[in-house]
Image (cartoon, rainbow, N blue to C red; front, side):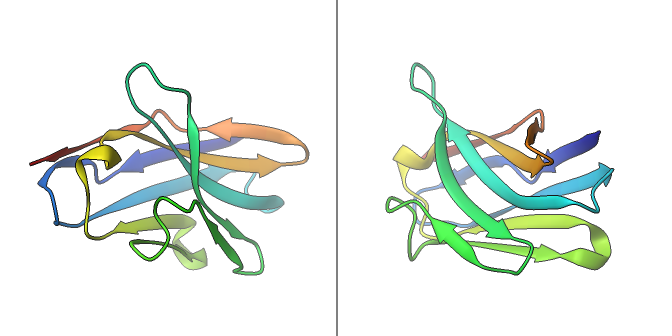
Length: 115
């Protein structure tokens, strides 16, 4: 089992920044990669960014150049630095971990970008 807890969401003006955190606990030693997803009201959940065990990263086109995913292995935490936020970034952001073929999700953290 893997437990994931997101934090760092909030209300920010367009053009501002936020940093989300995802703290992992439990059986984390064989996690293959960790992702951030987001879901806006009435829309399907969408991929945002991924970081692998080796540190490779992948981003959705919509956030490329504005968001940065990183990890602190000592703290078992993955971060999502979000810069130049837009209103369309407003969503609940979820952390996801893949381990032994199983997906684990956090409870989500709300990000609201105002104009």
